[in-house]
Length: 279
Image (cartoon, helix red, strand yellow):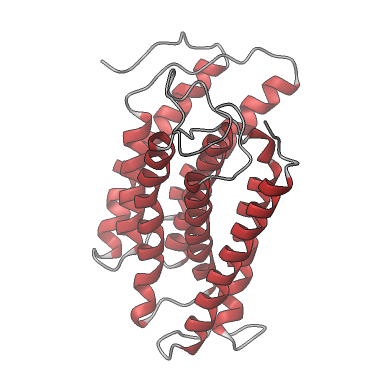
């Protein structure tokens, strides 16, 4: 048995933090050495510094969030009821002294999204235009891997669920912002990012004010819609389709997700009777 104060767990968190920082620093140095990377006019002529400031802030949030919730590094009994811990783990099925491979992958996804955030300060030109799409798309693909690894190793944790949701939400914030700044998406597409935070804020406000907060029922559409958004944002970031085509498709892709957010808030606030949409 252990908790978030375990020296071993904290050492592993520090190790992951150092590895993430080293990867981002290496990426920044590589970008600065690239003749294809344009320099924006501003406080510095260094493209690496321009890219590094938002990247460091975003990556810092990821590792801070992980550290804050280390106490939740225990078995999530709601994920897969009855799943057995892998005998190779050698740890308690309810709490863990190690961060786990799946959580490390999720932090790595956060690092990729942090790299995407840096391009908000970089002018789109040359080969650079592909990098946000590659980083974001890779992070989205790894979204399938971290959960699969956790289930395979019998290490589905509350920390993993919290971290996965935070990283997903972060990606839905920084990637559309870059796409908007680069002229690939209309500014109103950022309502997707706002909806996620407004939903969480509204639910938190109800709890803080003593109002009832109801559980969300199972849904067959939330995860697929999130996957559609991830795929669309990856395509929007890539110079594959004309910007005019991407902007025209944005409303079609965005509307169902906003409708689900609105429906879900009506459910958690008790204004709409809960029910499943798996049929």
